[in-house]
Amino acid sequence: MDIYLKRAILHIIDREAGDPVYSQVELDLTTEYIRDYLTKKIQKLSTPQTKTGVLIEDSAVGQLAKQAEDNFTYFSEQLVARWYDIYQQSEDAPSADVFIVLYEMDTRLYAALLKVNYTDAYTHFVEADENGIQNKLIINRAILGGKTQKADEGITIELETLSYELIEKKYTFSGDKGAYFSTKVIESEPLPSLEENVKVIKKVAEKIGQKFEAPSYDVVADVKEAVFETIEETGQIDAKEVAEKVFKDNITAQMAFQEEVKEKGFVDNAPMLREVKEISEKKYGKQKLKLSNGIELIVPLDVYRNTDLIEFVNNPDGTISVTIKNVEEVINRL
Image (cartoon, rainbow, N blue to C red; front, side, top):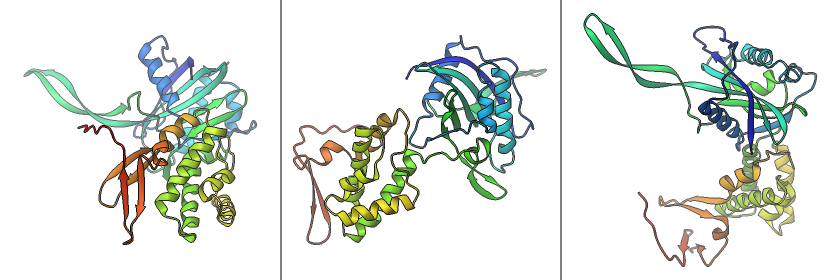
């Protein structure tokens, strides 16, 4: 995805210092490292944990979004002020820098809020006095994560449709830990993330599988394969298709699975990120197996189902033998 940055500004949220420090001057987007940093942060908001939804047009953030293009500095300050009004009520939410970015992607205009928490890092400090120059080792407590790290929290909003992608964290408010960004800042209930949906599917499939005496490792493998294949085919997760792929000819198990996943919060055929196929290939395109004897295997899906390459045999004593076949070369990497 090609991202064209149009405007960006940085606001400082130091919980110990008090109120936010709002910048009155935008970041210089002619500087390559600034463009590179912000672009990577936007790209990394698309993850298995990302939730999607649409803002209500009459909501506070929905109304603010209308001003993003024509009055960017005002929009950025008001958006951060609304977010911080909630954020500061948390007992454990950390200090951070917040970037507000206006950008184009595929000819569509977006606004993003990217929160990057501070981390501690050691550095040197040169001090001169009457005794001479002294090089000191100090801790800098306001270091930002590198460009390869995703933002700790963030939201991107397509300004025309008000559709959004959100990564939020849980913090403690009045002794209770929970999400706050969706419920209080944007006042919107997003759809479950890809990861949340798959967790529901996996848990229910294992439960249904136990009732029909299906091996747990086989059920999980089938779930990953079914999720991967349905996303590759349709760009979505279809509970019916997953049920058919996992439980095959067992109609009773299929129906029980479909009923229970919906009860547990699974959203069928939910709209997903445009990068969902790439994400699913990385996360679900391989089987990761950990055997009880300590051996760990990472097996591509096409290899996992090929008995000429790998085979699982149930032994009479209840143990399982794993046979890896037709290997031409073994490479031992340090």
